[in-house]
Length: 241
Ligand code: GLP
Image (cartoon, rainbow, N blue to C red; front, side, top):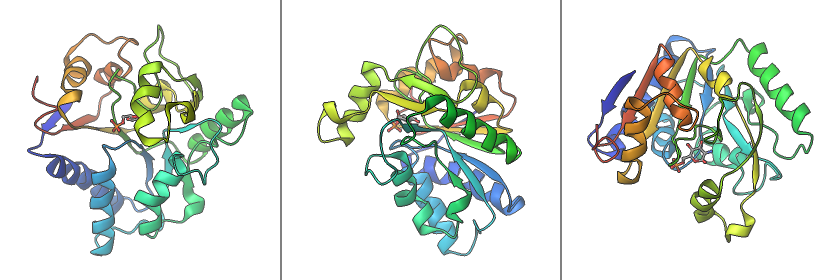
């Protein structure tokens, strides 16, 4: 596991974005795994800038997002599809048909998740996967539990995640209680993984993820077992390393 401690949020975002820009430059038909949450917003802004500068061409890129709330339409302003359109897809020359987010509007969990997993396999797997980090160590929506879920699946969100994400909804009652997420197995199959974490409130969990025991109680700790992971943190999130 390579750990990069950046001086600031902007520095972290730029350096992590450089990995994605280089990936697309080297392989224009690359398959990217993408993430939501507040942390990657700066990275997406840096990629939009690269596109505007003519440095990156997204026209042949395929993307698969980690997760989506179950029960939200793609047009809902808190859906992860909406987030991706607003922060990246609407601002670059990606073909929207090549962008994939689990279908939260499909109530048939088994069908929705199986189709998503099959789509990733058909695309040849993920070349470079972006991850944020939940305060409890979750990646995607893989919450702490007693096993590592393998494939894309339906999850019940924990109270702490519902609480953390309620800041983005009008009221906590509006936060969906369920989501579809890539499994830990899906994530670990990516050929390269980049994680971003920023802020003092992530320092404890970053430390547990990179140097604590590998346990499904801290889902992101499994990344210690992946051969090609880079963790980008700002100085605050890296303060306990
Ligand atoms: C959500 C997402 C995760 C994300 C996490 C942290 O629950 N499902 O993919 O990594 O929140 O978000 P933030 O970056 O806003 O702290």
